[in-house]
Image (tube, rainbow, N blue to C red; front, side, top):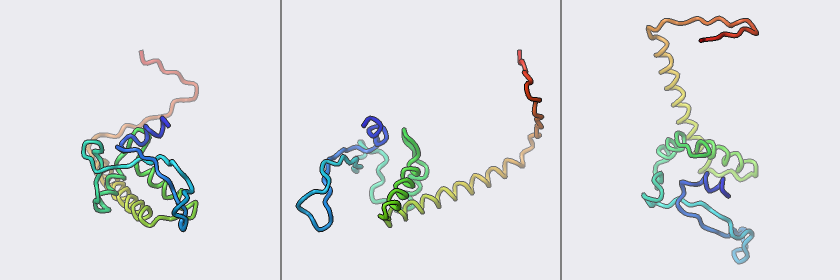
Length: 139
């Protein structure tokens, strides 16, 4: 529970809900499931985008991270987990695909930037490998 609290720290509300099977609305299949929820409260949840365009959500997810990792990794893991139980969610797939596009554009930009830096006037330094067992004292 401590790990979950830390991982989901940006959500500003925790609620307990029941899950029902389709066609059986009277008897819950699972009860008391803890769910972390984002509300539109700008003080309690500074990262909430609201009903934002897909491109805005994908840019935020592609670049954001929390105390336990990158948000994009969480999204990709959720997409994979849903596929593994044959429950592919079109909105998750679309969002994950859009995040991949953002990451690919970022990668292309970095490659272009890296190529530009290769044209600098700083001379290259060639390093030779030291023979195995060599000890160097820098004092």
